[in-house]
Image 1 (cartoon, rainbow, N blue to C red):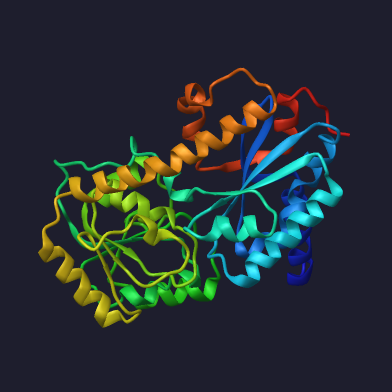
Image 2 (cartoon, rainbow, N blue to C red; image 1 turned 135 degrees about the vertical axis):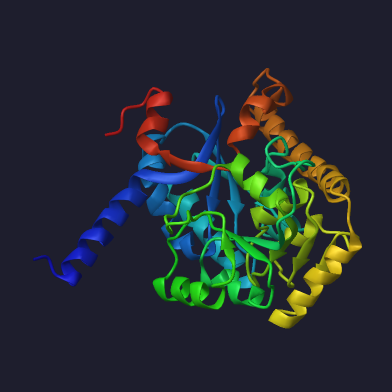
Length: 347
């Protein structure tokens, strides 16, 4: 019988192999070659190993990486990213990095260090054609928390909300945290679980239907990036109760449909009741969100057009945007498949 240590070693070996050949990104253009890539706070050291196969095969061909960070940009992370970019440029000098920043002032920080950057919050890539109000959907729950079961999400802060629903994009968090969350939120309804307890991932359209069955969206993490769920709430017409967070979700917030409170279960429960009493029409958070994301999308489109112009490409990226946009949530890509699309065969 295989020991626990042997199973762990086998899993770690598989994970290293997987991370070498797959990564979360999208290819915006093959000529010029432009990738939209993402790194998380706990994955910065894994970034280069994750892209080594792809970048090595593209030596000698100019490429651009539009780098999106999904974590709050602390001073430590800022320096870490600069070091990562330097290592990347040393190994792969044909690759140009451009940073997509989530909050005002961040692009200027990179520019002061001689790096290329623009303000383009990741939440502008949430698809408003999927996340939208459904007026005929009955409200069943006071609050919903759409968050993976990870300790940074602080689910316990919702424990005093009697009418609570949960959506989870995965069940890959620490088992101890999952068990503790299930214990403390045993009264909550899980949209992901059947009556028999079986878990399933929900397609985006179904997530939108679940959100529309709720009155308020919750944002409870302390140290996180823009948090896609916050944009999904607003586009679906939900007001929000949030705790303070430096990662950039507040870029799209307004006091008329967002209430920020201390990270305390009782304060959050009271805030949910207060926001419900506001009776915010769903069109208000949605229209405000659409207005704000427009400038961020325009910055992204202008950046890609600038790259086209630099390379003498006689195309208008604005004409390609409808094709490119649906993929900008970024999904796991196979480097081998990407290279095949480009006519390369990995060594």
